[in-house]
Amino acid sequence: MTLPKHRITIKHKGLLAAVAGVGAAAIGIGVVATAGATESKEAKSPVRKVVVKTTFSPVSAAPKAEAVTYDTELVPASSRVQVKEELRRSGGTRIELRLRDLVPHRVYGAHVHTKPCGELPADSGPHYQNKLDPVQPSVDPDFANPRNEVWLDLTTNKDGSDRSIAIVDWRFREGGARSVVLHEMATSSHEGHAGTAGARLACVNVPFE
Image 1 (cartoon, one colour):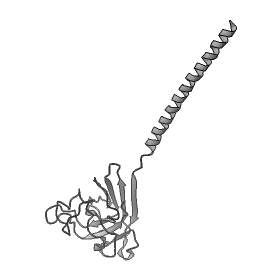
Image 2 (spheres, helix red, strand yellow):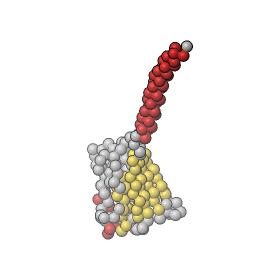
Image 3 (cartoon, one colour):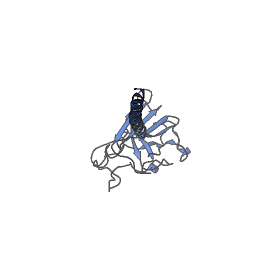
Image 4 (cartoon, helix red, strand yellow):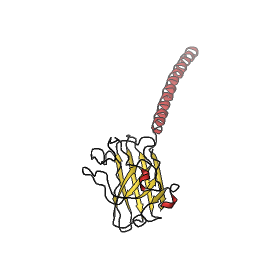
C-alpha cells in the first residue's frame, strides 16, 4: 500500500508543479501587462510651456533687452510683464499675458507679432496670422480676427495690473511668432480697420514654439 500511495503522490506533485508553472506564467503575464500599462500612461508627453517674465526697459536697451517700452508714460520702465505659452495636447495653443504697474483703469490692445522687438516700434513686424492675408497690412476681418490671430487685450485695475488669455486651435509655425506688442487702445474688429489698435507702446520678446 505504501508504494502505490507514493506513486500517486509523485504524480500529484508533478501535476501541481505544472499547474503552479502555468499560474506563475499567468501572474508573470499579468505583471508585464500592468507594467506596460503604467509605462504607456507615463509615456504621455507633458504639456510644453514657454514662459517669459521680465520688466520693460527703456528703448535704448534694445535689442538686447527682453522687453522695451516706446512710451514710458503709458508703459513705465520697470513695469512688469509675463507671457506664458502652453502647447495643448489637443494641438491648440494657450497664451497668457500678465501686466503689472501700468497706468490704472486703462485699456491696452495686445497681439502676438512675427518679429522680435527692436529700437523702432515697427521692428516687431505685423500680427502673426495662422492663415496669411494676401493683402498687407491686413485689415480684413476674415483674416484679422481673434481666431486667426492672437488678441490679448486687457483693462488694468486700480494697481495697473491685469491678465488676459487667448486660446486658439492651431500652433505657431516654427520661427513665425517672436513677440507680444502692447497698443494704445482696444483692438478694432470692423471692416477696413480690423486688427488695428493704435500706436505700439511696448514690446516683449517671446520665443514661441
